Image 1 (cartoon, one colour):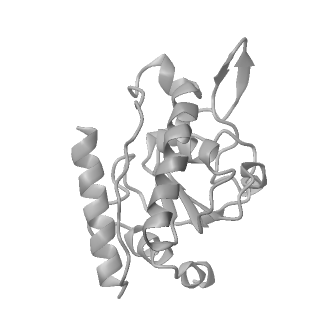
Image 2: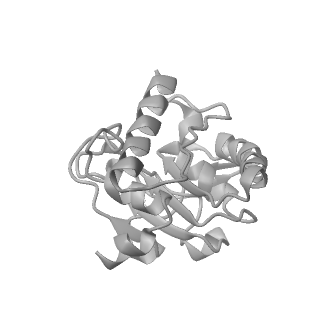
Length: 193
C-alpha cells in the first residue's frame, strides 16, 4: 500500500532528523495526485506528473505561507518526475530525487530552479534498468529524459547503498542521515563530506 510506505518513509526521515540534532523541522508526506500503477502506460508518460506538479505548487505555497518555512522536496520514483515539472517557479531550498526514472529534463539547469538538486539511486534499484529517453508522439511524451544520477545532469550525487527501489527511507538506511541533514538546512555538510 503506497500510503503505508509513504507514512513509513516520513517516519524514518523524521527519526533521522531527530538523530542528527535537527530541530524546528516538520516532515510532511504528500501524495496529492493520481499516481500511475507501476506496470502501466501511464507510468511511462508525463501526463500524471504534469497534473501532480499543478497540485504540488500550490501545496508548497500554502506550507511556506504558514510559517515562512524553508522547504526541501524529497521525491521518490515517479514523484521525481512530478518534482521536475513543479520545480520552475517554486521557491524551495533543495530538491532530492531518489529511485528516479528522470525528471522530465536533460539537466538540472533545465529545471529552472534556484534549488540545489540532489540525486540518489541504490545499487539494487530496478529503476536503473529503465532507459532514460524522452520521445514526443502526438500530444504524449514517453520517458523522462536524462538520468539525474548521470554526472551530465548536474545534480549532486548521494551514495544510496545497495537496497531496492522501496528501501531508501528505512530506519538507519544509507541515505537517511544525508536526507535529514539536507532537510535541516545542513546540505553543506553533506556536500563537504
